[in-house]
Image (cartoon, rainbow, N blue to C red; front, side, top):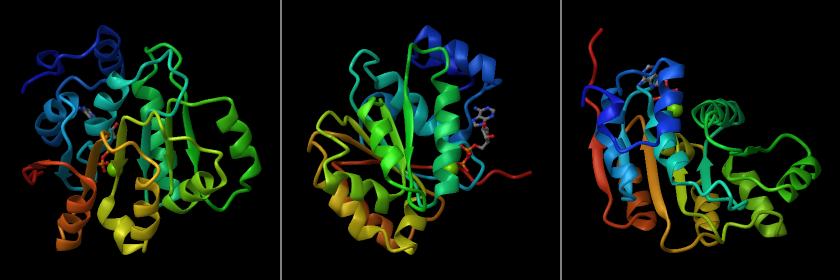
Length: 211
Ligand code: ADP
Ligand code: MG
């Protein structure tokens, strides 16, 4: 795929990508995006810096119903820093779309203000598994309208002991959701995680780029 124009993207997303200077999809974007846009479950492996955020973010944003003020996308990340980066990138990708609200929910900060923000509504939540699970237990986060779940840096989340929290979170999501797993490495534990979370996933692996 030589350009984003070959994909069935909205005019506002095309405009956004052009504004961000994204003229050509990266290898993982070219491989993963058609499946993400088609609503398939995807397990994608590509090295750091290969553009994985937009590989799941473009499809996630395109699938949102802006007028439905409910959490439709949830992105789980291993650390607060990564969650902040992903949220920033998603806000940039959604800039030309009407009114898309992206909220971060991470540990290490008081939970009260997050509860206040959630009460105002959000389309996408980006967070760390422990804090997202806390909100679900408290009933301050509702995932009944969730359509897409993303496990970003899934390998690192497993390394950090988040498997139980991820499984707990899954229990609060609708069964017919789309589940996207992104990872830089491909240990057997990733395949096991996929078997528990995903339905007939498409495997996509980026070519290792040189230079
Ligand atoms: P990863 O999650 O794989 O480590 P990121 O999603 O953080 O990678 O992307 C790495 C950098 O590449 C970011 O600065 C991002 O803005 C940029 N980028 C992503 N996709 C494209 C593209 N198609 N064209 C140009 N730059 C891109
Ligand atoms: Mg990333």
